[in-house]
Length: 32
Image (cartoon, rainbow, N blue to C red):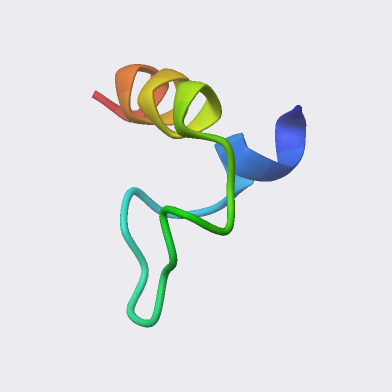
């Protein structure tokens, strides 16, 4: 689950559908 944390908040060409939504929200919370 560290892969998502390493990725930026929303990189160019990033597909939200490609990755699980719950992980995206969690990643954003960590970044914030």
